[in-house]
Structures are given as C-alpha cells and as structure tokens.
Amino acid sequence: MPKKNPLLQPFDTAPFSKIKNSHFKPGFEQAIRDARKEIDAITANPDAPTFENTIETLEFAGQQLDRISSIFFNLNSAETNDEIQAIAQEVSPLLSEFGNDITLNEALFKKVKTVYDNLVEIDLSTEETTLLVKKYKSFSRNGAN
Image (cartoon, rainbow, N blue to C red; front, side, top):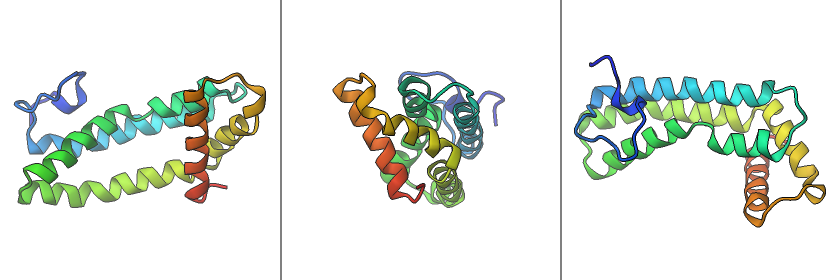
C-alpha cells in the first residue's frame, strides 16, 4: 500500500482512480482515531458549553470519517465484491463501537444538554435551533440521559 492513503488526503471529488480496497481499513481506523480526538477536544474544553464550542463543533467532528464511509458504503452497494464485503464485516463493528462511544459519552451529553437547556436564552437561527434539538434528541433516544 502506498504511504499516502488517498482517503486521508483532502479532496473535493473522491479520487476513485487512486483508491484501492487496501486503503479502506487503515483509512477507517485513522479517521476514527482523528474523530475521537475531535470529540475529546469538545469534552476537554474548560469553557462553558455554547452552541459554537459544542453543537457546531460536534456537527463538524468526524467529517473525514463520514467521507470515507460514504465512499465505501456506496461502493459496497454499487460495485461490491468479496474483498469489499470482507472489509465491511471488519469495519462495521468499529463504526458501531465509535457511534456508541459518542452517543453514550456522558461528558459530551452533559455539554449538549447544557446548551439545550438554555435554548430559550440563546439567540439561534432556525437552522441552529433545529440542529441543537436534533443533536439533543439523538443522544436522548440512544440512552445518553
């Protein structure tokens, strides 16, 4: 495998001609590590939770992982093969574990809840309010409270 994984490089359009199946698992693993660091930065922030430092930052956390997942699972649906299916079986539990680690993260939920509980006191746009409510309900529905 080349030193530089094209999945981990910045791109606007997926560089399909450069992506090999061997890039996916290490790409997922690195993107999960990076996303965990982004989540940890939110929970470690000593400032009072705000829309910007909690909800907005959470919304953008894991973008690289989202891009890799989108590419991979679209390929798995459209052009699957035995190797892609084997990779899916390996990475799906990693993604599930990561998702659970976020939605069951008490420190993160506490920050989201603090912002949500102050909804009437903060000046948010309709879109920001929708995002805040969506994030809060997602945590609540998944057992964070």
